[in-house]
Length: 149
Image (tube, rainbow, N blue to C red; front, side, top):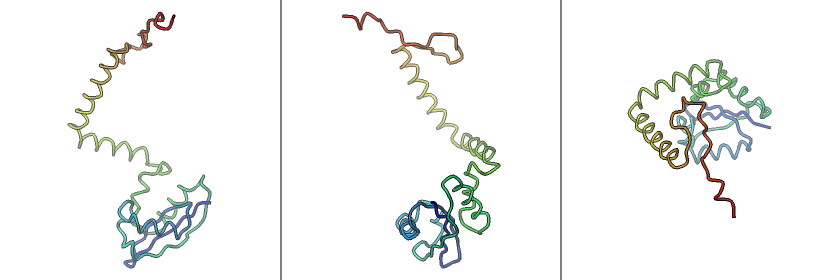
């Protein structure tokens, strides 16, 4: 079983999450790693944790999304990253386009390095240099006599 829980800090901010661990263990983990999730927006040292519901692993994401929508919490943006969100594909595509625009030079450099490595590999082991030429034999050219005694 999975627990859906809510962390509430002394300022009234909420964080909704799920866990298979006990609530006490999960609360302790939030306190130790307070800067690694949306809970970093809370005063984690001064929070209480409460059980909202238990559910199965199969509907874990759905139930978490339900509670995130129901409660005013700091991790509302987490919904945008969930495949259960109807707009997920659109949001992901928009994010990828924005990332590509912001990191144009970095991606160009990585693409150049990647293409160089592929060319070096193909020069050594054979194969198609142009991925558009699908009819070429892409098997390695190995002399079978190497394996004969």
